[in-house]
Length: 324
View 1 (spheres, rainbow, N blue to C red):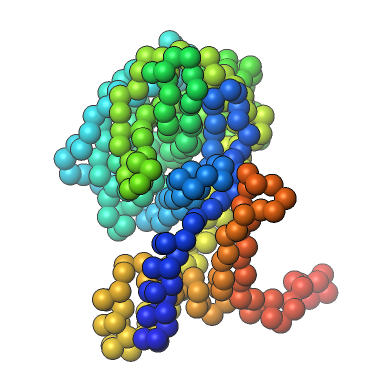
View 2 (view 1 turned 90 degrees about the vertical axis):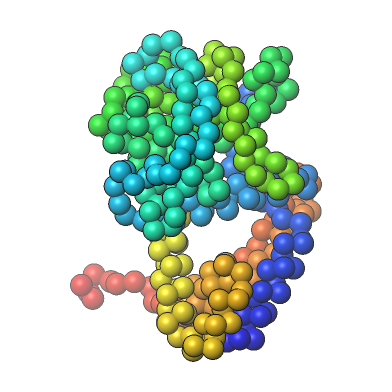
């Protein structure tokens, strides 16, 4: 076990020196406007988008609790944020307080690790746990005050009213019971991610963002592509993956001897997680490779091999009607 821990530790150091890649961006919604989870093949952007994806995965390390302990400690920042009111009134700027992300034991929402948490209680009330977010990049704009990166925050709690402003943007009267929608006020938070340290800094949004004509295309793209539904499915999958990862961590830790646990305590904090990913009983991620795509220089190819689950090894095909 000690050898395995040491091997993983050195592998982590090697991976940190490697070029990190990710898949191609979601198509631009209009000139200079990109809604992304990933992006192009330049070194800085690959690292940046890979980290963005990992933050999305890590954001699902959520613990059950209530809102009352979500915003604790001092206010770290207060910035002006773009607001699209649910009642259809004219969009405006409002001050929003940001707090530190709680410890893991106090996590209640799927938020971005290392990001300060915006408190929307004055607008969403107790529905803050149903928040969702997406990143938006604006570049090459005539109005330079628009340029930068934004988080779009919305709510999926149907106890709030559907956002009338967005209904007008996507040209619908009602969302229907089969579709997800933007409920309550929608917010646009301006930020910048340092290309070297990846630290996230927050900035006041300008008035130009709430009047930005390109928002119509942004929300129409999300609506027509069923982005909210796809996001919900992805969230469910990531949450399930995190549950399995936590269970594997607990199993591996329980099997360790006192000496192995002492060695582990001297390793980086993520070592146990890496061991769980690489060495769990089934479904482990054995190898990952990231390389340029020969067919398209704007993409990279990510390959992963996984250890078969116990059911795969048994060639189990599921139950038949006769079994039931």
